Length: 113
Image (tube, rainbow, N blue to C red; front, side, top):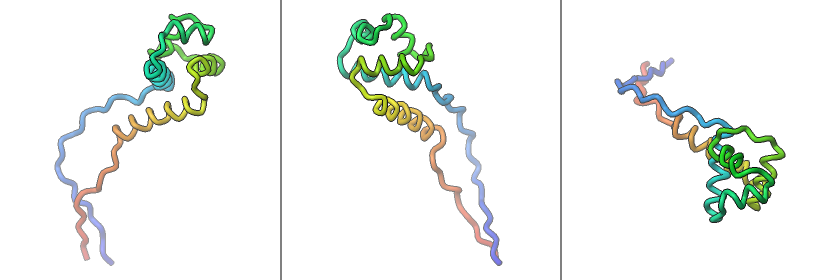
């Protein structure tokens, strides 16, 4: 029987990656990006959502953990479905995860008989 032996090349240690974003941070980035893409002003979106501009700013900066009702109000004020918003948040987290944990080869393999 042949054994598979992995040959590890000496590699410099990789720098510590940036930590995975918190849910509220990814959500905030998505909401802000959506608002800015639409050319919306913070005060106008906050008014339509029935919240203060300060609170919306805190949400967008990932400082507050909004309730599901608040998320629905803000996404409604932006004219974005919750499903679209969730897909965008998941995409943001996935991009970060892929950057942190890229698929890499195992390096050279030596077969020994």
